[in-house]
Amino acid sequence: AQSVTQLDSHVSVSEGTPVLLRCNYSSSYSPSLFWYVQHPNKGLQLLLKYTSAATLVKGINGFEAEFKKSETSFHLTKPSAHMSDAAEYFCVVSPLLNAGKSTFGDGTTLTVKP
Amino acid sequence: KAGVTQTPRYLIKTRGQQVTLSCSPISGHRSVSWYQQTPGQGLQFLFEYFSETQRNKGNFPGRFSGRQFSNSRSEMNVSTLELGDSALYLCASSLQTVTGYTEAFFGQGTRLTVV
Image 1 (tube, chains in turn green, orange):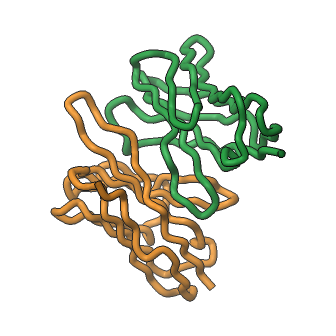
Image 2 (image 1 turned 120 degrees about the vertical axis):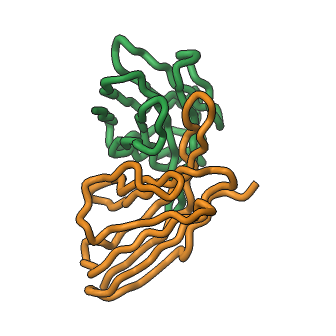
């Protein structure tokens, strides 16, 4: 069984300030973890993924996430927010060998203020 | 390399009708998954097909069905449409590797409105 909890439904930051989107997961096996971003009326785009290699994962657009097994967390961060980062973000967990059984978090809406 | 293509992008149907949505995965990807996205329920897994066989299934009624063809293209069918079926339907494909599967690559989705 697996589940994922995104701890904040909405996060608001000012442009140029750091971003932190929090995600906790539960899995009975070694998971793969992903962050996806969805802009309005668009599909989901992969930001980054963790698949049991390095625990600090760097993704596109300056985002990174750290896998912490002891805390069952996979928080997404970015040092400096840009207006174009405003979107909905999804944390996803899936079995290591089966991306087809992914479980999505409820999403976090990121607002970036000028 | 072409991405995941979903057609149509937008669809309006009447209650009681049935609808078929299509998804063409990335070339070489044999796993295709379908998701329903609504404001109230978020992203929910419908089913996954691999090599023309349904491998995983979510908790949706039997009105929701799918199939996959030998070229990996997939269709999803919803019969006897209800207002609550209005949603963005997303298709994702992934590639099997020697160590497992790649991440899912998503299409733009089909926005279904039931009136």
